[in-house]
Image (cartoon, rainbow, N blue to C red; front, side):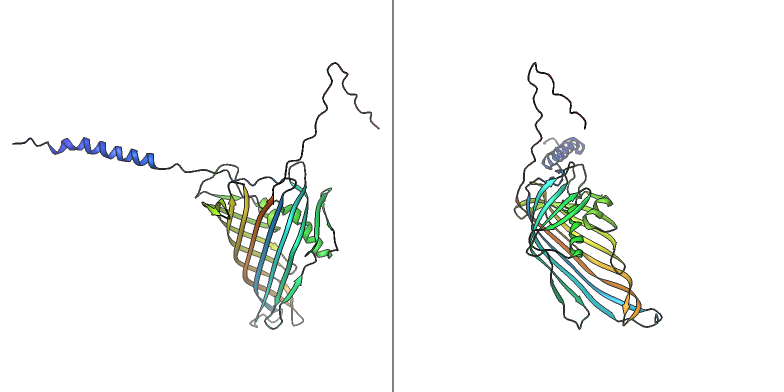
Length: 316
């Protein structure tokens, strides 16, 4: 009669097999890859083609003062901006920030709508077809046009663009991996969007191919508050962001979500309180056409062996 092993004799063997399987599984598991996401510093000679679209559609309710019991009728308004320009970095300051750049605007158009009865106004902005140079001198930005001139309002608007030319720096200093989240400091958000207040939360979703590059795909939660000529405005946007990890450059960003505003205006010739609700969307696409070079460092004069040191300059 064959010998039968006691049931408990199999326990150590089964335990060893299980542990071996767990060890094998642990070896097969790939470590989580980390990335140091950092926008490449601008270089003199960088040439980038940029397309920017802004869309804002609002329903504005005007309540004449003294007639608060009256139910206001909504008025639809909209603003749709389309820009395409080739940007060339001409100079950097001591901190490596862009201090002079040139833009050739191949397109700069805006469509404005106000009310359902009036047809939309299609405007060609003054900068379309023109070469514009932005240069920082003594803390101020000078705007010059090579072929023509711009209105005072458009010149003032473009003067703010030099501070935003480097793009939005939304990355932390340390390495991150997919599924990480972080907050962007408010000063960066304000500088990039030109608003009075702003918060931005970033979620690193994955790395995937986009426009021929391995890109970090990020989701954004953006809150903005600012002022218009008629009153405060707020944006509550969600965004998608593609950052090329091989060349460390932003390729594409899109933000969309609800917009609200309130203020004071006129309705039928009377002072009225205004309140508006709608949808806003911003898209920015960047295509680096030519990479610039670092400016050469000044060469220190070499002392000749045995020669006297150079004389100090005589103060005047």
